[in-house]
Length: 121
Image (cartoon, rainbow, N blue to C red; front, side, top):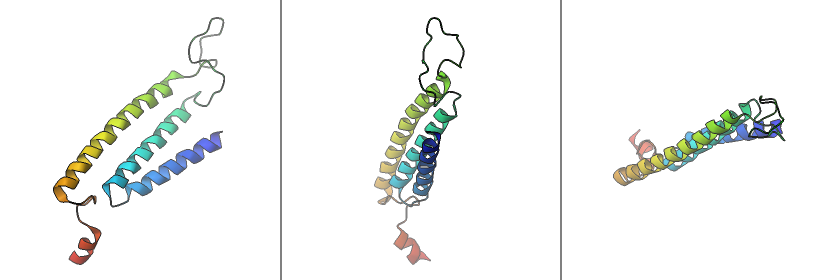
């Protein structure tokens, strides 16, 4: 299970970085989203009991109140907060993307189409 999670985090991170280096703003926004998913998985997996199975999330009578018998709620709370912030960041980025495209007429990150940049050199 851990190797599958590590591979998934690696693929999401690699894909996100590759998309961040692309010249179009939509690809950059998708790269940021993939990187945020990779970070969320990493935070969740780094929790002490993140991959634990058959552990109760809430207190149960007759079971000692320590993390050896329960799932740790802190990584879950951090990931939930990161998901909400990620959605807000993506929405803001898409609004800025649309405004930039409307004002410049192109969706390239630097505002210049690649052919025009080559002709300028």
